[in-house]
Length: 379
Length: 237
Image 1 (tube, rainbow over the protein chains, first blue to last red):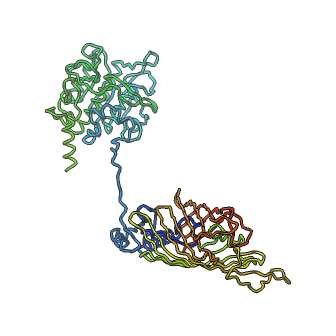
Image 2: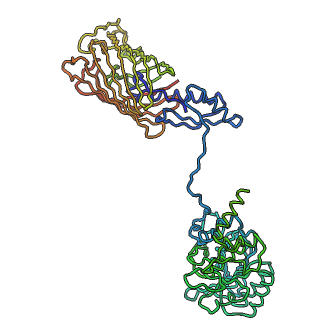
Image 3: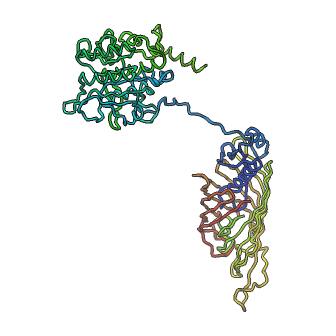
């Protein structure tokens, strides 16, 4: 900061505007350049600050020079009011946790503290099989996130479909890519197994599956070491599928299924013993033995470069499958159905407590998770 | 050093629309004392470059804690004018006029007389500046050597809309100090100016407009234009 000299009379200044404007500024510039040159530095910026009575010059100090030493030397010059190193300041607005525009409206972001969960686990390398309709693997949020894609539907074209793409997005959507959402387990390895198809000729274009396609997909999933199988579907009980599910459960594979509120017992396979039945968190009475997870107004991926808001147990099941992937990365699963820590009175899944495998004992699981994160940060 | 398209003093031309050059040497002491001299040269009626005058100044300026600066000083000026004999200087015959030897004209075989007038005068001044505004008052016991006691009030306002560009406006009024007037003319002589300057590190380019009130007695009998545009280029070393 070079001290401004007080303005004073100069002959002819009436046509120069002010007293000594140009002459004084030029003199200060020359002084600044000389000070910089004497120290092998250069002037990179300047700005008049008349309120402080100084002209500010920014000097770039070469790496070979000590910044502190140069500041001390320059400060001693009588023309210099003071010198200081340039400091860096940071905006204190809350930094966005994820640079995905729909993340703030994802129910899991708020209810499950997804960002905090991800500091513990992202589901890295946990193998999840979703048995569903065709996933759009080129959807911007899914590009590179699908480990395997197989089609077990006989005679159907392999065009991307809504339901499977939405379920896949909830589980593994890529974070921090500037678009869309954040998956619950973005680093899981997803097998997208098509056993269902979108019936485009019917009103509402429902997603349908047959037992043979589902059986093929279940077998493929187990043969390829899936650790979690997501079945966001419901239908009648089926012996073929039941036997395959038995094998999966015997191998400690978590089988997650959507609970159908319109069917007694929630439909198959949610009603099957050992299968984790999941319903969306909707107002209404608690359903014994059924976990409730975010499944209302969930933004997720759709084929093409689209995102949409979806509702239903299918998407609640996808949340739980993702959460189990986080848990599986962190620790070997105990009995899958009991791994979920439920928060009463509505059987809502406490994601934080589930990830920590700490049953609720006063306070929320996320408070406990926060303590864990603090201890990690302090280590 | 400054080159300007016209030499004007408080709105009045002191050359016949001829350009001039100024060289100023000045020194500013850290205490606030300052001194300098400005030498002016320019084209005369004979298209010769001659010394048109000088101004020496000495003063002291200080900036207070409130941000207001004050400035006190004195200046001694010498002004040389080269006029055709038919042109007058001020209303009365100048006290310091001296006729120069005949100047050879460019056309061989003819000569033309030129009268060299010299007007020396001194002023004391005081001014205050705050931010980009300056107000100065000058008092002279013998303005332009015409035994005329005058005061001149000068207000200048600068403004920097963007980096390196300075806009400014100036208004001044010259009036006799002791109640005497200039016969046949308004007692006060007003001059105005506005302009812009583009600043470089080692100089600046200025474009200025200057005007003067209509009923004014011009000290030099040139074909005076009230309103003029002045272009100048300054280099600082």
